Amino acid sequence: MKQESRYSRRWPQTDAEVSRRDFVRCCAACGLGLALCPAFAAHLIAGQGKKNASPPGQPSLKETLFWEPAGEGRVKCTTCPNHCVRDEGGTSLCNARINKGGKLYSLTYGKPCYLDADPLTKNPLYHVAPGAEAIGIATAGCNLSCKYCQNWSISQVGPGKTTNIELSPADAVAKAKERKLKWITFSYTEPTVYLEYALEIARLAKESGIKVATSTSGYICEKPLEKLMENVDAFSVTLKGYTPEFYRNVCGGNIDDVWKSIKSIAGAGKWMEIVTLIVPGMNDADDGLKSLAASVAKVSVDIPLHFPRFAPAFKLQHLQQAPVAMLERARSIAMKEGLKYVYLSLSGHEAANSYCPGCKKIIIERAAFKVLKNNIKDGRCGGCSYKIPGLWAT
Image (cartoon, rainbow, N blue to C red):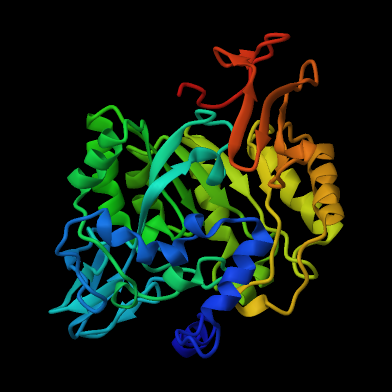
């Protein structure tokens, strides 16, 4: 596949093509307040880091961990399956790495464009420390180009086009300590593209007794993933579809690489929850959803599977919002395949709650990102003592 075709699928970087007003409308459709939207974090973030925060166009540089020479001054990135090969001065598809002097450097190290306290439920992680908040961190860039991305304003551009702050890994951990938070999360964009920054934050967090969770597409190579798993406690993996065609045409990736990551995370004994956004008319076929759920169940029937609600956004603004009935049907299909914990990210819907597979009673009741009731005692149902998988310590 030619490089140009990959770029052509990336989100346009001009306000003329998609306005801020469009993004606000998308957020409203999803039921999100503006304070929770990364696109608006740029107006707030400067006060959270050092006063000499770099303006757009002045990213930092740090040599990346996973790359190799490609001859004649070119470099090949081996962090993700894109395996970008770049000449001098060339940037990767994720917009977060650059060839400088025959070496590959990160443009995002210590330069987050999002920093705020978020509930873990938002990742979504429903079986991790119910009610707990975390310091959420994201930098610009992503190694996929999903046409429905809600966070296009920071994921589909490089750090030269976002408002960033200077925040060292040690400062990030200090932020969590200041807020007396026991978790740090990487979300909104893809931690694979700021891997070196995420790794150092996770290492320092572990030394300080702070746990780390990450939201990821799972589109990452084996060795970088192994490195990431060393100090990350929980993973929220977005399994975007069930066919190679959907991944290639809608997301710009390869489904096989994602499944490799899912199996590796499970094999390492790490806690993992899977998220699939159902796009009407694209990945909503019953047979496909059945295949997806069956494949997840083969890894483990205890893996929670989330179906958030699609809202028109990005390059797919012409589509309708996903009907609730579509999500309910998907949940029914998944549970028939043996999955014990299947969730719909719909505030007030019964499927947003956790139920005990033993006694069938509610064990965690939720409203939006809030936990209203928690009846899990020492990892077991408070009613019948059925063991509920997860990381329950808050």
